[in-house]
Amino acid sequence: MMDAKDKSWAKVNILVVDDLQDNIDVIARRLRNRDAQVYEASDGHEALDVLSVSPVDIILLDVMMPGLSGVDLVRRIRSKRCASALPIIMVSARNDQAIMLECLQAGANDYVTKPVDFQMLCARSETHLGIRETYRAVLRDRAKQVNMAEETRLRLAEAEAQLANLALKR
Image (cartoon, rainbow, N blue to C red):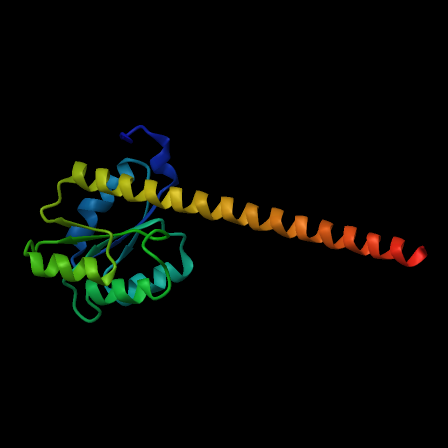
Protein backbone atom coordinates (compact mmCIF):
# COMPACT_ATOMS: atom_id res chain seq x y z
CA MET A 1 0.00 0.00 0.00
CA MET A 2 1.26 3.48 -0.80
CA ASP A 3 2.19 5.60 2.17
CA ALA A 4 2.72 9.33 2.54
CA LYS A 5 6.33 9.09 1.31
CA ASP A 6 5.57 6.75 -1.61
CA LYS A 7 6.41 8.52 -4.89
CA SER A 8 3.73 6.63 -6.81
CA TRP A 9 1.13 9.08 -5.47
CA ALA A 10 3.09 11.85 -7.18
CA LYS A 11 2.02 10.43 -10.54
CA VAL A 12 -1.69 10.24 -9.65
CA ASN A 13 -4.06 12.89 -11.00
CA ILE A 14 -7.23 13.02 -8.92
CA LEU A 15 -10.37 15.03 -9.60
CA VAL A 16 -12.35 15.84 -6.45
CA VAL A 17 -15.91 16.98 -7.18
CA ASP A 18 -18.17 18.33 -4.44
CA ASP A 19 -20.49 21.31 -4.19
CA LEU A 20 -19.14 22.11 -0.70
CA GLN A 21 -15.65 23.63 -0.80
CA ASP A 22 -14.95 22.46 2.78
CA ASN A 23 -15.39 18.84 1.67
CA ILE A 24 -13.03 19.37 -1.26
CA ASP A 25 -10.48 21.09 0.99
CA VAL A 26 -10.33 18.23 3.50
CA ILE A 27 -9.80 15.52 0.89
CA ALA A 28 -7.59 17.59 -1.41
CA ARG A 29 -5.25 18.66 1.40
CA ARG A 30 -4.68 15.07 2.51
CA LEU A 31 -4.14 13.90 -1.07
CA ARG A 32 -1.70 16.74 -1.75
CA ASN A 33 0.18 15.75 1.42
CA ARG A 34 0.77 12.44 -0.38
CA ASP A 35 2.06 14.39 -3.39
CA ALA A 36 -0.95 13.63 -5.60
CA GLN A 37 -1.96 16.16 -8.24
CA VAL A 38 -5.47 17.26 -7.27
CA TYR A 39 -7.95 18.98 -9.53
CA GLU A 40 -11.10 20.47 -8.02
CA ALA A 41 -14.61 21.02 -9.32
CA SER A 42 -17.62 22.39 -7.48
CA ASP A 43 -20.27 20.92 -9.80
CA GLY A 44 -20.79 18.42 -12.58
CA HIS A 45 -20.35 20.88 -15.43
CA GLU A 46 -17.08 22.17 -14.02
CA ALA A 47 -15.94 18.55 -13.62
CA LEU A 48 -16.63 17.90 -17.31
CA ASP A 49 -14.60 21.00 -18.16
CA VAL A 50 -11.67 19.75 -16.06
CA LEU A 51 -11.90 16.30 -17.67
CA SER A 52 -11.74 17.84 -21.14
CA VAL A 53 -8.36 19.47 -20.48
CA SER A 54 -6.68 17.58 -17.61
CA PRO A 55 -5.15 14.10 -17.38
CA VAL A 56 -7.38 12.65 -14.65
CA ASP A 57 -6.62 9.13 -13.37
CA ILE A 58 -9.48 8.80 -10.86
CA ILE A 59 -12.51 10.82 -9.75
CA LEU A 60 -13.83 11.23 -6.20
CA LEU A 61 -17.38 12.39 -6.77
CA ASP A 62 -20.11 13.67 -4.46
CA VAL A 63 -23.54 12.19 -5.13
CA MET A 64 -25.80 15.06 -4.17
CA MET A 65 -25.01 18.24 -6.09
CA PRO A 66 -27.29 20.89 -7.54
CA GLY A 67 -27.76 20.91 -11.30
CA LEU A 68 -25.92 17.92 -12.71
CA SER A 69 -26.00 15.33 -9.91
CA GLY A 70 -23.18 12.91 -9.24
CA VAL A 71 -25.22 10.05 -10.72
CA ASP A 72 -25.95 12.06 -13.87
CA LEU A 73 -22.29 12.99 -14.16
CA VAL A 74 -21.27 9.33 -13.93
CA ARG A 75 -23.65 8.50 -16.76
CA ARG A 76 -22.20 11.31 -18.91
CA ILE A 77 -18.64 10.19 -18.25
CA ARG A 78 -19.47 6.52 -18.90
CA SER A 79 -20.91 7.41 -22.29
CA LYS A 80 -17.32 8.24 -23.29
CA ARG A 81 -14.98 6.40 -20.91
CA CYS A 82 -15.28 2.93 -19.42
CA ALA A 83 -14.93 2.10 -15.74
CA SER A 84 -11.56 0.42 -16.29
CA ALA A 85 -10.14 3.49 -18.03
CA LEU A 86 -11.37 6.09 -15.52
CA PRO A 87 -12.38 4.89 -12.06
CA ILE A 88 -15.04 6.88 -10.22
CA ILE A 89 -15.53 6.58 -6.47
CA MET A 90 -18.72 8.12 -5.18
CA VAL A 91 -18.39 10.00 -1.89
CA SER A 92 -21.64 10.73 -0.09
CA ALA A 93 -23.27 11.35 3.26
CA ARG A 94 -26.09 9.05 2.11
CA ASN A 95 -25.60 5.46 3.16
CA ASP A 96 -28.84 3.90 1.96
CA GLN A 97 -28.57 0.96 -0.39
CA ALA A 98 -30.90 2.46 -3.00
CA ILE A 99 -28.56 5.37 -3.78
CA MET A 100 -25.49 3.11 -3.63
CA LEU A 101 -27.11 0.74 -6.12
CA GLU A 102 -28.14 3.63 -8.37
CA CYS A 103 -24.55 4.93 -8.42
CA LEU A 104 -23.07 1.52 -9.18
CA GLN A 105 -25.64 0.85 -11.90
CA ALA A 106 -24.84 4.23 -13.44
CA GLY A 107 -21.21 3.12 -13.74
CA ALA A 108 -19.45 4.15 -10.53
CA ASN A 109 -16.65 1.80 -9.49
CA ASP A 110 -17.10 2.20 -5.75
CA TYR A 111 -18.91 4.10 -3.00
CA VAL A 112 -17.66 5.52 0.31
CA THR A 113 -19.65 7.40 2.92
CA LYS A 114 -18.96 10.67 4.71
CA PRO A 115 -17.38 11.39 7.02
CA VAL A 116 -14.63 9.91 4.86
CA ASP A 117 -12.29 7.36 6.38
CA PHE A 118 -9.21 8.58 4.54
CA GLN A 119 -7.28 5.31 4.84
CA MET A 120 -10.24 3.45 3.37
CA LEU A 121 -10.58 6.01 0.57
CA CYS A 122 -6.89 5.62 -0.26
CA ALA A 123 -7.08 1.82 -0.17
CA ARG A 124 -10.05 1.80 -2.51
CA SER A 125 -8.40 4.36 -4.78
CA GLU A 126 -5.26 2.22 -4.94
CA THR A 127 -7.32 -0.84 -5.83
CA HIS A 128 -9.09 0.94 -8.69
CA LEU A 129 -5.88 2.58 -9.90
CA GLY A 130 -4.29 -0.88 -9.95
CA ILE A 131 -7.16 -2.22 -12.05
CA ARG A 132 -6.75 0.79 -14.34
CA GLU A 133 -3.05 0.04 -14.78
CA THR A 134 -3.83 -3.60 -15.58
CA TYR A 135 -6.38 -2.44 -18.16
CA ARG A 136 -3.82 -0.09 -19.72
CA ALA A 137 -1.20 -2.86 -19.81
CA VAL A 138 -3.67 -5.16 -21.58
CA LEU A 139 -4.39 -2.41 -24.13
CA ARG A 140 -0.65 -1.91 -24.71
CA ASP A 141 -0.14 -5.66 -25.16
CA ARG A 142 -3.07 -5.84 -27.56
CA ALA A 143 -1.69 -2.95 -29.58
CA LYS A 144 1.67 -4.74 -29.80
CA GLN A 145 -0.06 -7.92 -30.94
CA VAL A 146 -2.04 -6.04 -33.58
CA ASN A 147 1.17 -4.39 -34.83
CA MET A 148 2.97 -7.74 -34.96
CA ALA A 149 0.06 -9.30 -36.84
CA GLU A 150 0.08 -6.43 -39.33
CA GLU A 151 3.84 -6.77 -39.84
CA THR A 152 3.40 -10.51 -40.39
CA ARG A 153 0.58 -9.88 -42.86
CA LEU A 154 2.77 -7.42 -44.79
CA ARG A 155 5.71 -9.87 -44.89
CA LEU A 156 3.38 -12.61 -46.08
CA ALA A 157 1.99 -10.34 -48.82
CA GLU A 158 5.56 -9.50 -49.91
CA ALA A 159 6.51 -13.20 -49.97
CA GLU A 160 3.39 -14.02 -52.00
CA ALA A 161 4.27 -11.26 -54.47
CA GLN A 162 7.82 -12.60 -54.80
CA LEU A 163 6.48 -16.10 -55.41
CA ALA A 164 4.11 -14.77 -58.05
CA ASN A 165 7.02 -12.97 -59.76
CA LEU A 166 9.08 -16.17 -59.73
CA ALA A 167 6.20 -18.12 -61.20
CA LEU A 168 5.82 -15.56 -64.00
CA LYS A 169 9.55 -15.75 -64.84
CA ARG A 170 9.33 -19.54 -65.39
